[in-house]
Each structure stands twice: as C-alpha cells, then as structure tokens.
Image (cartoon, rainbow, N blue to C red; front, side, top):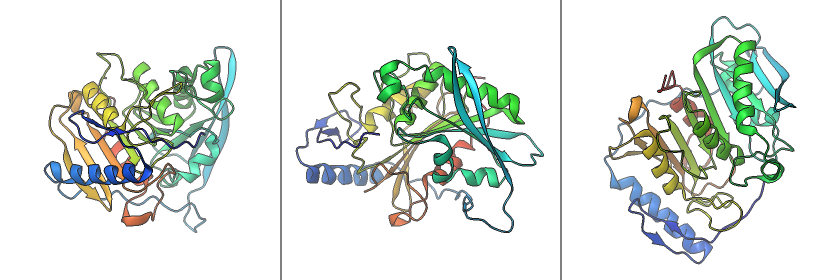
Length: 328
C-alpha cells in the first residue's frame, strides 16, 4: 500500500468551488472548517439507535466455535483463493458479508482486525475475505500495484466467490453485503458498477470511486466513511499520477446521482464523527457519509479519540438496514 501525502487543494463545499491549499497546516484547517460547516448546514438528525457492540475477539467462556476454511475458484483459467468464516453449527440462513482488504494485507488477517469477526461469533453473518494478486487489487483506471498493471480480472473474481460461497453455506439469497478498505474499497465501487444487483448494500473506508458508474446503473445503498487527516486518500482528492483520486465530496455527488437522491442531507454526530444521510432515494436506497475528524488512513477501531464508534459498528448498522438489492 502506498503511503503518500498530498498537498492538492480540495472542494470545501457542495457548490463545486475549489480552494487551492498550499501547506499541510492549511489543509488541516480547511478540512476542519469544512466538517464544522457541514455539521450545521443541514437539519440535525434525531438520535440514531446505537448498533449493538460487536464482541471482542478475545477468548471468552461463551464464545461461539467458528469454522475457517480456505477455498478457491477459477477465474479466466487462474485459480484464486479466499477464506470463509462461519459459526460451526448454523441453524438458520445468514447474510453473506464480503470483506475486501486493503493493498498489502491478507484476507485472513483483515477479517479479525476490522472487527467484523464479531458478527460471525454472534451468528449474524457468514464472512468471506478474498486474497489479492500479490496482495494488490485491480480497481480499474490503472490502479493498483501488480494486479492493476497486469489487468487481473478482480471484478469477476469477487462475483465468483459470492456465487461459490452461496453454494457452500446456508446464505440468504437477498442480503449480500460488501465492505472495502483502501485499494480494495476502490475495487468495491468498480464491482458495484459491474454487478449492481448482486449487493444489498456497500460500505467503504479510506476509498472513493475512481469514476462514476455508467448512467442508468441500478441504485445501491452506499456508506462512505473517511478520515479528514488521511494522507493516503486525501480528503480533497489527489491530482496527477496514473490514477487521480476524486475528493470525498465529489465521490458523494456521484453516489447520490446514481441513487437518485434529491433531498438535502440530514446531519448529526456519532461521538466526534460527523454523519450525513441522504434518504428517499431510488428504490428506498440511501447514501451515508461518516467523517472522522483527525483520523488518518488506519481503520477506525473501537475506542478512538472523541468517543466515535468503530467503523465495523457504523457499517453494520447501515448494511443491516437493507435486506435485499433495490433492483431485484
């Protein structure tokens, strides 16, 4: 995973005006101001029901025994691997949660580190985590690493593991959820453009779509979470290079356009995190933005400063509100 800072300016309002910023200090000041202005610009959200805490990964007396299996699928003649994790004794059909790790990470490691393993322990989901080509992913537009340079068919790979996991496990036919982090979050957006009816909802951290989906692509509920101090995915985007990054605000404009979200956002806080929700979109979909002030590219875990919730808790509260793809 590249760890690159950026001094490129970013759009500080939804009006599309651009304000060039020259120094890291100025970037930080403008980002904080943008977050504060956002928090008061729209009607305040009513208090949100708190998602139940995901259990700790430390051993406990009542911990559910899990089954972890390495499995494989063949895509374009190449054998690819992924790991699935499920409760040992599944008594009912469960949602499938696809967790896409960042560049430089393995699927088995990220399943535990992100906190989503707790859902499996609570018998609330079956988790699958694919492995990238030399720990990288082809998100399109030349991004990223070995997978991007070789044109590895990762979009078809993700669709193939969803189909394979559904055959192996008692998975509900409706709710298949996808979570992406960093480089793999960029792939998640490319995956939705190619297979929008496959997923009931999608959530990412540290990632933005590299381009909008084609006009007419089916609406999908999206949650985009970001850290205002992220230097790998600068909040205001990054110009130049092989794969320029749009700003977080531009990405939200694309997602809202795809979902046909016409209403103004409702804004509130969850700890120090600023939450914006656009509802009433096509097919009862919605778009949600969660900004962690001062947070960098590292995955937000429980107990981060300001009392903000862990990314896994925020994401599952959003994902589990959507039981079936809107286009079905």
